[in-house]
Image 1 (cartoon, rainbow, N blue to C red):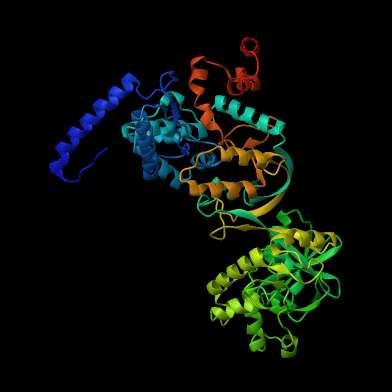
Image 2: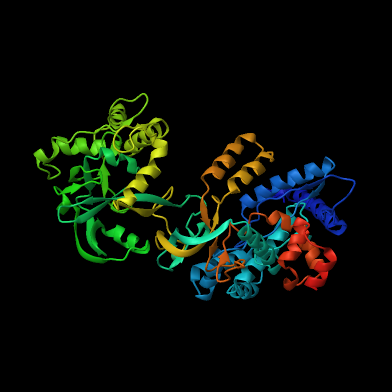
Length: 584
Ligand SMILES: [Zn+2]
């Protein structure tokens, strides 16, 4: 497609379009892009991740597929028998959400979809009629997959369309269902209680595609450790941390003086956390009553006992974020730049913070970690090096925190307490289980992302919920990592520098939720109220391109596509004659 703005070029442009149309017609008639196995040529399968089909193409699709098309054509010219197929991804909730809005007569969605359809259809009445059918999610997918195919043809992409499918097709469901039966057989799928991103307004777990800007902001569940600091009358201040090993260097607890806090009555304990934290803990499975609500200032001056036995005061700090985790943190000024800066602030001007001078003047950083190239107090060095003068210099303090975190994680050794002598990179799990055994800590989950707060497409803030009976893929199952490493070693990766990314991912991958209770997709064969989510059903679909056109040609029914069918097709297991009898 070539467009010229100036009138003088119009004739020239029309000539070019004429040539384009002529050859595209010829390609179509001669079926030149329909690739079938040939004994005389080496085969080459080229795929690009299938696009999500909730609207028309954008220029990014055009670019990606144009690049792919260049590759496909290049390899054809090199003598390869190239298969370049394409399909449409429709799994999950976005298309369903669109249909729900059309059904509710949401004016914005109606206008948007009328404008999309008008790109392809001129008659306004016809546009109206098509959009009104979008109350059915499959109609959205059907309409856009068909116009997208035409767009790619207009671009001249050399795609074999006989193999086109959507991830909502019954044949595809049968294929993915087989894949999950295999994964279950191998012990890679398990069920259990698990923290998940959650939309409180809809009462549902949410995935990347339910989150506003979900593909850009890298939203994840982060596990904090909530450490219990006990008051004399048995109440608990729950202070959260990502570095529980620093508990041995605690000098005080921080609260935000203007922040809103609550006292909770749980079975056997009274907890103090921020008001916002209470809402989050409720979703994380804690049962409690809110006893009272008060400002953080009220806690200042209180003495509390840390799990390591030291008695420390509660002090005010402005950097404390009541919206993050429990809204209470403990202070380790020797090894945490924020803590060091806040301690200096309050020691310099105790009156300004409403703190008696004698409460703070004796507080000094406590050295607990030996770090190469740093002295006793790495946080102090990092703060002074940057000329930081107060806890309000956020970006500099964040930079300093990153520096110290890295230096201590990779080079530090704990020198105090029961785990003295252990490397920081290996100590965290040990300290956590020590704290948990003594009932001095609980896990607290929080949402982390490049941009906060994270919002669901419905507008509500995304939180973490701990939900029972979740299904997940277990990448720590015995043998999986070993097999994955071996498979990776057999692969050629271009450019080679990206191999490291795959290797790292294999190492950190743990459990990953693989099914949800709504959306379009394939039902879990062993628990059909669950639907396999949109990344989990998109891992081996390239193999499906090799058979889907045959399945359609032979008019194989959904019932025929039993697990034994796929066992034979992809694994060569079983006897073909017996199989054809069994599946009819
Ligand atoms: Zn929502």
